Length: 190
Image (tube, rainbow, N blue to C red):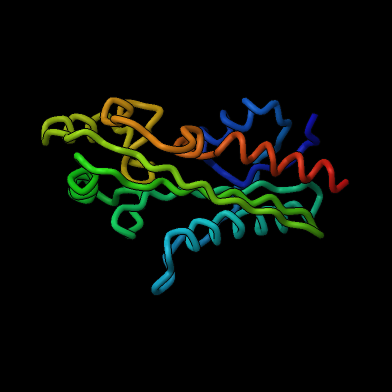
């Protein structure tokens, strides 16, 4: 059984996934700059954001609880696709993803005042070809607005996914197996 932790995330999907692990947690929502640094690789970017969220969360809680931070990015051809800024931006993303594979990288960091652990999970996702009408209909659903890469695999966009190689829960936003292993490390360290 895991101890109480804090989740440094506003994502309802991450909350649901963490609940699946039976973890008792509080929420803390650090406000961080999510800009990509010059020449920053996608893996470095998501790992940095996950760790920064956890560290700022730990500061906000004055070290009272261990803090779990996570970040997810959709990556195609080495380019990070963030949350769509407009319908045109979303359509451009979907056109790039349609009929191809891409990577979803989710980094998780768990920090205490004296220790930190971090993991990065990369999952390959293949989209079938998506028509312009399907893209427009998906945008109109409102679902893509707050999603990295403009889609949520657990929602309507699941119908675009031909297959994945890796962790489904990591694509949703929190890799359950790897997160549980981090929490076990925390337990053993106490």
